[in-house]
Amino acid sequence: MTEKIIWNQGITKTVFPQLCGDIDADTVIVGAGITGLTAAYVLSNGGRYNVAVVEANYISESATARSSAHLTTASDFSYEALRSKYNMDTCTAVAESRKFAISFIQNLSTDINCDFKTVSGYLYTEKADEIDRLQTEKEVAMRAGLEVNTAQLLHLPFKTYGAIEFKNQAIFNPSKYLYGLAKYLNKLPNCSIYENSRVTGRDDNTVQTEFGSIRTKTVVYATHYPLFFDLKQTLVYPYRSYIIAAKVAENIGDDVYWDTHDPYYYTRTYEYEGERYLIVGGADHKTGSSTFNPFARLESFLRLRYSVHSVDYRWSNQYYEPADGLPYIGKSNNGNEYIATGYSGDGLTNGTIAGYLISQEIMGLKEKQWNGIFDARRFNLLASAGKFIKENADVAKRYVMDRLNATNTDTIQMLAPGDGIVVDEDNQKVAVSVDREGVFHYVKANCTHLNCLVYWNRIEKTWDCPCHGSRFKPDGTVITGPAVKNLEKV
Ligand code: FES
Image (cartoon, rainbow, N blue to C red; front, top):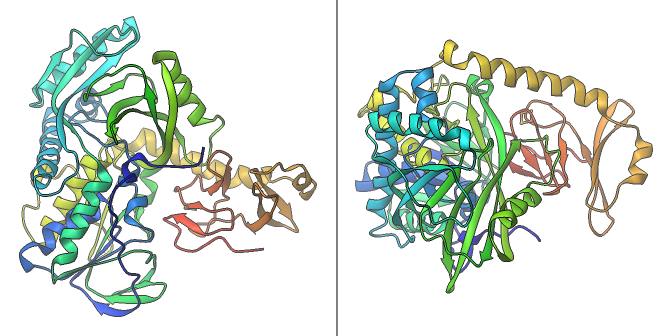
């Protein structure tokens, strides 16, 4: 099955123009996902700032439109983990910020038809020895100010050993929400949106795209990862997550669920054209390193627990894990640039928090909201050290080992349709792939970001970079950055 995202079905898309020529803006926002459009909304409302949003691809392809659309106050990095790494004040600030994000989206959903609904969220376990862990999480989350209960009965058709219920969570359709926001912004005289306009360069006063440029003083990188050099690039690490939507015999209702597996599985439902789909996500792995078929793993999770009629949609997403458990949001060390990265699996809530916080910072308001815990310029050695050392050692290892592992050109003959391999040709590393029609593609294997070697993603037929998560089509075209240039053709 080829990729098909359920959120984009049946929606009215608005196509925005490509940036051609030179324009001026007070603020340029790079990326039209939830972070970028939230920031554009707050900044341009009331005619305060003249804002230009530039999106490399299309709104319906952004990371936001690829999520599973759970809006939770529960944290990807558990509250107990936050408490032991930091303290209760940090847990409370995280809980407050996440409540804020959900109510921000809820308020806008009165004008944007995005299927917003308040539900409960259940963290459950299928292991008898994890009940205490759930109770600890419940107690810490309650102390942080959340409404959490021990759940007695779940509407799940398989055995669980315990669960806690987070009240006042939500679900929505992220594509409808983004298009609603974009259409609203498009009507404002002081906001313009451009799609298919990848940023290719930046100097002190200008942001360049392929066919245009914007003169500006302030740039917001709402790109999931800083595009141009920033030390934060060593503090966040790329992972991929996978999602399928299926018709099943059981109806689990509207609530959202996630379990205690590592990586965990997350589940919700969505109704489209009178059919209810069960949406299951998980099978996460470090980008550029999959050794299993994640969609097959998801399907087996599903079939072991539900009576499956058909699997109708599947798509994937990427997220960045921060070294110290919290996202980096706000002004960076590079002049008037703002970044938002390290959302973990909480992209929708953290994206909303980021869009809001960055716009407040640009306007000179509420600088230390939520105790400043998301400050993009922080480096907390104690909280970061373990993950920082492990992940960066991994990057260094891949940088060296992938070069040594490149095979000789004889192996090209053994490639099956849909496969790819990195070969050594005259001391040059070449990424060779063959498509379903048997056509070979040859590109340089050196990632155009910082020169790591790309890795063939057999399931999605892409070249993925293990170092910072750039992804490329078989012909070398950039799918997602931080790389802004295509792989060179050979
Ligand atoms: Fe940084 Fe490839 S994404 S080297």
